[in-house]
Length: 307
Image (tube, rainbow, N blue to C red; front, top):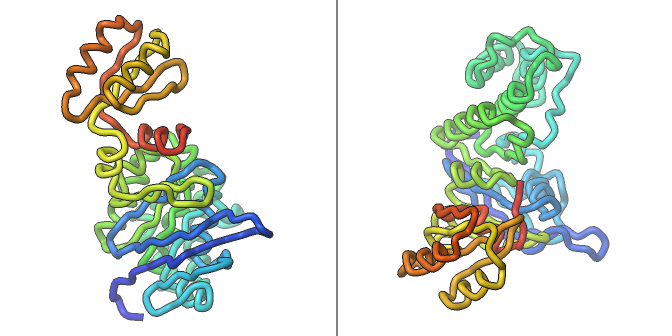
């Protein structure tokens, strides 16, 4: 296989179990050097979609084209150019950190000195060279995720699937993982990321597909989605009667809704100050004005907050 970039395209992917569809009509393209995000709550169909893209879940309808290969028919050939980081670490506890990479290389017919050299390269890439001879159970959660990413890169893939890769990591470990994903993109690797962390999606992804109940309900760049669905700013208000805030929402023709103990109100694009001054006159015990974000988008489109 040459070093030419490879594009992945999903055509009308459906997955049904019995008569129950869990993924319905997914279409999109992932280009080299691009990070595309699949966002949605648990049960939205993200992992099933990744399984179909990778060729391990057989679609009920539709197919995937990855370079010259059609998936699932040519899934084995396609996977030779892919890497995947699943939600579970599934590392081999009987092997050292180094051995988890050098032995995994055998799956791609990389053996001997080449396997050892590649393992060493990847440990340096993910900053685990000092842990090469450690056992897996001696690693922190963040280190394990970095090792799983290194393993996914053993075959120099053209595309990497990251299925909720930072779940359970502390903020520092997440930042380190983000740095490595950004580096992959810079090197021309296509990345498909599923996550329920909106800050992660907003920071990393070039384009987003928002999923709910197996369907894509909206798509676009993070900035376009935020601007189109919410606007530039929102107010978070606590301690004011909901009826008063609903009346303001209707009066200014803006989106608003309850969440938690408070109320979220989008400020109008054309004249945010007018509504803001009205809100201030209510003397709310807690009042915050901030930029709109992807959490707000998801709350408006699905009625739920993630995370």
